[in-house]
Image (cartoon, rainbow, N blue to C red; front, side, top):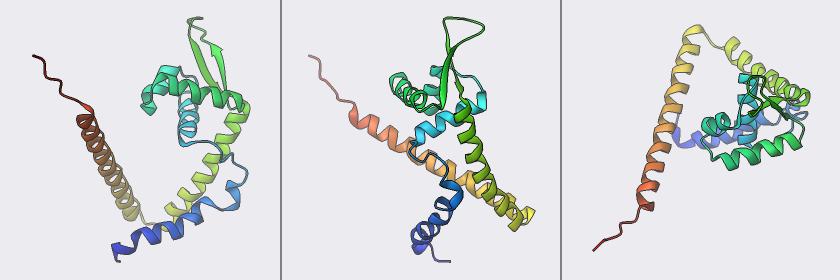
Length: 159
């Protein structure tokens, strides 16, 4: 297989994953950070703003804007903590849970297709390759961020 055409193969086949009929019922107007936020709230069932900001690695003001949009769309709700009334916790609404349930069904459909078509050895190999790819991209992103931060630092001579 030639890797020169990898991008072409990727984009030509990506539409098969993102344009089937089961995605039509999903709210695709959500940004990736909004989707990550919903998935994080779903994982924890109840979460506070600082956890969202820390997990997604965004400022608290950005997290607040994301949550505000999700509350306005009817996917999240704010409540007071049962343990400390000063703390505001976030939970999925019924519509938010319904959206994520549909999303998970669609994703799991593809995972099942892959699992059924691969041997155990191939699944293990695919998993290792995926983890390695994520690690490589993460390392690259960390290096780029570090280079950007170094460029931003200005030396000021003090006399």
